[in-house]
Image 1 (cartoon, rainbow, N blue to C red):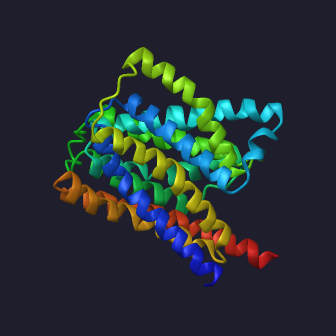
Image 2: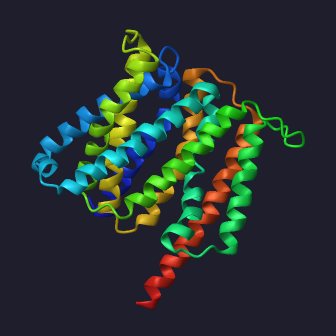
Image 3: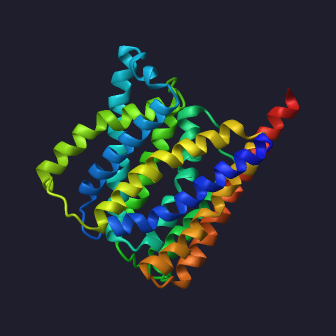
Length: 302
């Protein structure tokens, strides 16, 4: 099997896992508060990433970093998982999965905009057009089609979802200067964040967790969405001979996610969700098109 085919399989596996997480979020939040869900998911993720490092015989890398990098791990852990997932789970707690999930996908566009002041990238007309199309989709979903009245279904829930995209994009801006091994870095971020999350959980909701299916769903999120999916995607990018073909697979995820939301959660998918999601995906496609054109231009110039 060629490296490209292997990369596509890893990519498809990742997309399949990502497609289930919106459903898993709602199942977990049925009996857990967002911070309790975050505690369980973070602890599960630490365990699975630790096991991955042991199996790959890279556990020694955890202890080979400079003191400054451990401080960095704590700081980045406060952003991801602490702040990012607290906002994201808060959004899913207030909004139907079919609304929260598409809004979360706009983080890629936020990243493009934040890259202008922080990474020195140029803002082009296509970026502006992509933003207009993308956020038109956000308005359609957030208002459930009542775009003329701008009557948002849950303003706080929408704000939490948009806020999570800003935090996630900011995290990746910071991560561009991260020299740690990706899995080691994520493991340490979550490990240092875990006591902080546990303290907040104890203070606000308590540490008594219900032994229900919600607990299983939270473990699933930690193991697969926060842990294994990240590793699979890293392998896909490493193996890929053509990364754009692999990255295009992410456009399958939001539509496949609606299938799980409909059949498992029983949510009736609104026409406004389909319309808004198509607009968001169109905006992201326009933004990706600009990135690919820039990469081709750089390649031709070499």
